[in-house]
Image 1 (tube, rainbow, N blue to C red):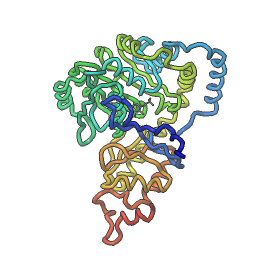
Image 2: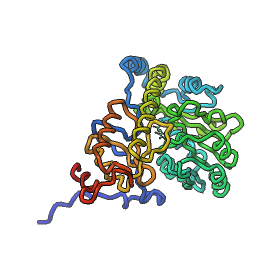
Image 3: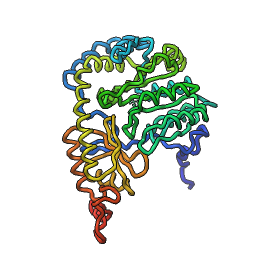
Image 4: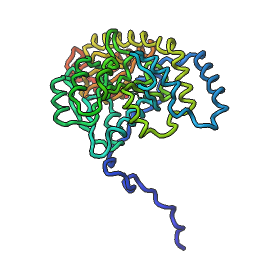
Amino acid sequence: MTAPESPAAAITLADLPLRDDLRGRSPYGAPQIDVPVRLNTNENPYPPSPGLAADLAEAVRRDAVSLNRYPDRDAVALREELAAYLGHGLGVERVWAANGSNEVLQQILQAFGGPGRSAMGFEPSYSMHPIIATGAATRWISGAREDDFGIDPDKAVAAVEEHRPDVVFLTSPNNPTGTALPLEVIARIAEAAPGMVVVDEAYFEFARTGTPSALSLLPGHPRLIVTRTMSKAFAMAGTRLGYLAADPAVIEALLLVRLPYHLSTLTQAAARIALAHRGELLGTVDRLRAERDACVAWLRGRGLAVADSDANFVLFGRFPDRRAVWEALLRHGVLIREVGPPEWLRVSIGTEDEMAAFRAAMAAVPAAGARSTRDTPAAGTSGRGDLEAIL
Ligand SMILES: *Cc1c(COP(=O)(O)O)cnc(C)c1O
């Protein structure tokens, strides 16, 4: 008797007729591990208040009875309120919104990148920029930052003139380094670039006092786009709401590629509630900035290298085996992010208690001492050995 026919053999990704330019790629993958202290994806650790939650529930109840209808396709009321929040004399015709600034960036690449076109960023920077570019069949060109993670304007202008990218990404404050760019650097690059220039200001609200926004460069730079998000300072990462400010012609271009009704009625309602409660939501920013500055000072006090930060995270190092440090912190219930240049790690700023847990875990991990510091262990008691005991 022959065995019953086996169910269709499972196929693998390699068997599918995937686009050639996507073969061998890895998806975005910040680990989502359920541990007590999650300091890995730059979320705001303070949840919305019960009062905000009640207002949101009421807005959802109000809108629920019309969910048989499509949402406002152009999200006009929300965009008006976002424009008022941004200031700088902006109106609804200069502001656009989508599901997270990642979707905003994707729409920008769909409209201004694409097959035969290129996008350029200055790395280390946000890992999603090249991933979104690739998804939009846009060739990625990697420019370089300096040792202090800033951008040298002369070198950047030379790189832009050499490669002539259709889209340039400037992240300020930069992720994962925390570095904000002076407006002069942005203006120099915007004037040299032949195509669109996107300033990703996802962390702008966390910048140190006096740091100017690229919004002030919009007049006179019609190919400049400034993107923002509610995922970080607004403590609304779960809402998925990102937005941008640009010339009205840029928004006309984006209307050509956006999916109809891309922003759900409930997303629009949640974002408007968040804006109405912005005093409460943004009220946590000062606490987070103070914790950030304390974290920078504490890490430096341990002899570590720490990048200046205008964001809600800190990049620190340098660890010959950063994976070992990351794993050891995880054993202590603290999840940070292994990202950025080799030998560096990034910690998002949490609550006072979470940051105390981070410091305690760091102090308990001998290998978390800096390379060639006073912590260098004596022969026979290697830091690595202590770490293995913890693991
Ligand atoms: C977190 C982050 C974003 C936000 O993405 P959303 O899709 O709005 O959640 C955008 N840009 C940078 C540089 C970021 O770090």
